[in-house]
Structure formats: C-alpha cells, structure tokens
Image (cartoon, rainbow, N blue to C red; front, top):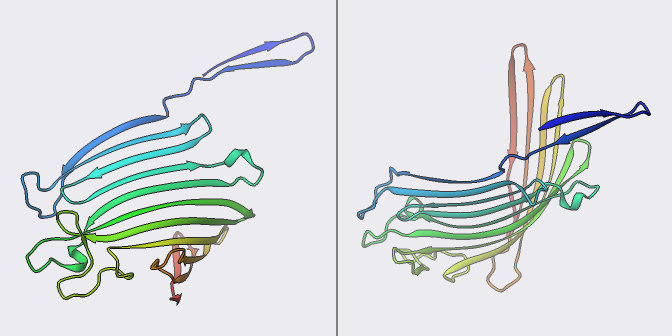
Length: 244
C-alpha cells in the first residue's frame, strides 16, 4: 500500500491510496496414516484436499471446499458464508453447507455375522441466516435436510442388523428428515466476568410420508466469575426431547 498527500489552494489535503490485495485463496493437499485397523494393500492411508477463498467476489464472502478420503471413511464438504447480505441495514449473514460423509459404523453397530463391516452414509445440506436482534442479542434461523443410511462393504444398503433389528426408523434403506431450527443467543461481559445464554428449538418437518418427525428444545448457559487472579467458569445445559 502506498500513500500520497496533495494540498490545494483551499487549504485542504487530498489523500490518494494505492491498495494491492494479497492472494485471498489457495489450495492445500495432505496425507497420512490412520491408526484404524483395516485390510487391503492401502490400509490406513488417508488423503485430503482443500480449497479456500476468503474474499469471494471482492465482498468478503468465504468459500471452503474440502475432501478427506480413507480406505472406508470419506468426507466431502462445501461451505459458503456471506457475512453481510447485500449490505442491508440489519447486517444479516448467510451460510450454506453441503456435505457427503461415509463413516465406519462398527463402533456403534458392531461387525456382521460374517465379520464384514458396515458404514454410515450421511448427506446433509442446509442454509442458515443470522443477524443481531438488539445489543448483546442475536438470532439464528435455518433449514436443513439430511439423508442417512447404513451400507455394507460393497456400498449396498442394509436395513437390518444380524439380530433382525431395523437400522432405520422409517423401515426404508435410508432415513430422511427436514429440520427447521431457531436459536437466540445472549452474550455479555462486564467487570465481574462474561456470560452467555442460548435457547434453541429444532422441529423435524414430515413433508413426505416416512420422514422423521419430532422436536427438541435445548438451553445452555455459561457464566464466568473472576476470583482474584483466577477465573471460575460455570456451565448449565438442558437438552430434553419434548415431542415425538
């Protein structure tokens, strides 16, 4: 950045600044070895790839694309954030997330009778809006969709375990649900310490027959108290299921 000052006869100063933006995007590639015990010639090997841009379209919008791949597990994610939608006076922000993941399910469901393993496939996608409501208060509202099911080693859907129990609530190869969410957050700070309170409501919407339907209310609070040179942090969380 370079700066020049010019003066005119009216006693005013004109300031001219030449600003050159640094590269705001880039790629990264990595690899490693996982401690999980698997079989095959490439057992334990994992690789990752990521691309990020911190100033998309020159408007401080952020885009992150990542892929992590192992012999069984894999996670692909796209995350886009607009911190100030159309420069509106409410300072609303928007986040869009799309993800496709496959994780090993033996830790929860165990191996099958023939010692074969199963995996859990999830495809969530959602959009979330947030904005300040008043001083120290902010609100978040979002809508998301999730498609989840179990698969065998060949990628075929599994509907029941070895004992004949269903692996999905709907009785179909996959469970689908549409979630509407609202959250209100209070954050404050003062001479006696900081505090936070959040109230969250989630509602599953049965748009199609067989889609999951229930609601959930979550409340959490945190209070920090300074006692001399130390700080005491008090937390309280409540997560009851109030309807099915």
